[in-house]
Amino acid sequence: MKKLNLKDVSQYVEKNIGTFHEKRIQSLDSLKLSQVLKRKNPYLFKAKYVLTAEKIIRGIVDAHISSSEEGIFGDWLEGLAININEKVYGGKKSGILGIDLEFDDDRIRYIVNIKSGPNW
Image (cartoon, rainbow, N blue to C red; front, side):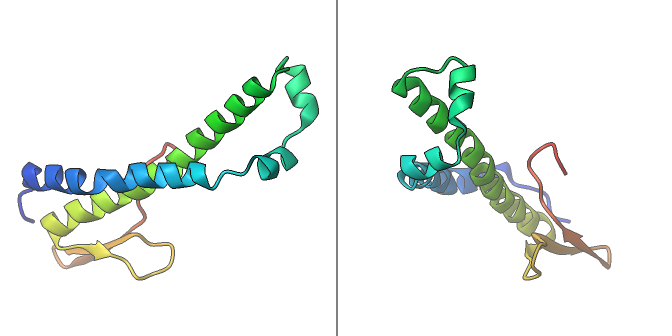
């Protein structure tokens, strides 16, 4: 095991944080109101006393941003974790479907699935 150089971590973040923000914008660019409205229950808006188009749109956009950011940020953190593991253990992105990371330590092969949220 090698010692982690925090400067390497900072450089990775600086180099790759733009990708996270670009994907957030792409997610909004692909949002189509007509498609979203087909999946919404119009009676729910009335029950919640959401009566203006502005409030409906704001709620839809806020919900979309929140849910898409979770996945986008999780993917970004996965890349960071793999990068750190590569520096410390010589690990790599796994080629196995559903597995994120593979590395060896003390003659033991570790197969890792990386999760960034509370539900793992």
